[in-house]
Amino acid sequence: MPILNTSEILETIRMIDRENLDIRTITMGISLLDCACDDIRALALRVYDRVCTRAEHLVRVGCEIEDRYGIPIVNKRVSVTPVSLVAGGTNAASYVPVAQAMDRAAHTLGIDFIGGFSALVHKGIAKADAVLIKSIPEALAQTQYVCASVNIGSTRAGINMDAVKIMGVCIKEAAEKTAKSGGIGAAKLVAFCNAVEDNPFMAGAFHGPGEADCVINVGVSGPGVVKSALARLQGAPFDVVAETIKKTAFRVTRMGQLVAREASRRLNVPFGIVDLSLAPTPAMGDSVAHILTEMGLEYAGAPGSTAALALLNDAVKKGGVMASGHVGGLSGAFIPVSEDAGMIEAAQAGALTLEKLEAMTCVCSVGLDMIAIPGDTGAATIAGILADEAAIGMINNKTTAVRIIAAPGKRAGDIVEFGGLLGIAPVMPVNTYSCEAFIARGGRIPAPIHSLRN
Image (cartoon, rainbow, N blue to C red; front, top):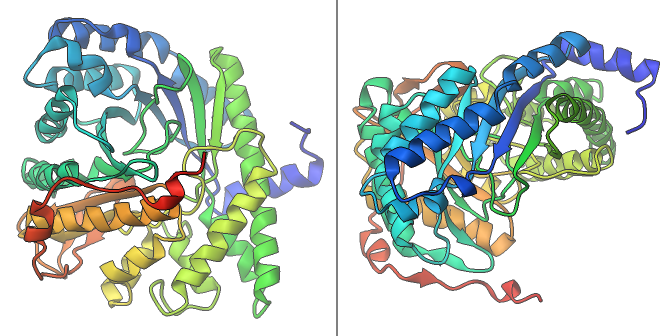
């Protein structure tokens, strides 16, 4: 990577100091494939030992890099091989002991989250996958740091509607089992279409079977930097707006590349990818929604929001890919409602609806993210929302995801407080017309014709 010149260094310092620029996460991916055995307790011990051994120095190295370069690194995380791939040989009725071992490892290491209590069921549900999905609500209720994900569809395979139906129930149960904390279990659970193997962001991170034994992936952030750059372009045409975002994304990604390479060297672990995603927080000045309003929208969700988000997402990718030879993960713009101050404002003002969010997910990085809905929403309705979002991902050959919380005891207009990066979620109304007969059909929605591109 070319050495940063003086002006770039000064510009980066300004962005860190004034515009909330940070490295959102250093995530170590760890393979658990050779931990497999026929006893669930022995497997849990092996998982604990493997994670603690591999990631022993992760937090320390992250802190050293922060001190050395003055770059904030908000999270240090671990992702592991999808647990359903390593636990099937145990014939256990529940994989909760493995989740508990993952949680103990996270506590021992001092990391923020550990992802990979996951299953890949886009074409069918194996016995181990069924056990894992059934274990998710209890696993998330009994752990603090564990995150879970399930891939329910892909462009090549179509959408597994049997899995969609099961996940509607799973998400609702995860919220109900953590009702005392606002249904936070569901906030640590993602349903994907076209899940990627090298995503460093939670709650959907897992270490894919096509990855090396251990890798370092870095997720950058910088919504505040992009907003500040656009604030200097009042009335400028969109060509200029796009070019400015590209240049800003280039600088942000260069910083991520620097941190990733340094972490890789210090930990003696291969560098995987830099994820370009603009990841917001509830803090003022760190909002993707406010980038859209800087372009001229009164609120995110106003007419023009999808076009503005499309421009933003494309420009971020074009700028970032020039700054790193290893771009991966999700790479785009996140629009989580509870984790973005501007999205919270828009939802509370009534400018942002679930249907408009769904439209915006056609052009952004992931999907319906950190959305609270009324607690009495039925499992079939949740499954219908999953199916709609998976269809967007399948048809457009992109990753989409749903992280939705049926907040126990809450109605539309109420507020759910999760705290930290998970933020505050306004409870959004849901279309109450039934889709139960649709979800009850099961089977598989076939892959689109453009899946046959060999």
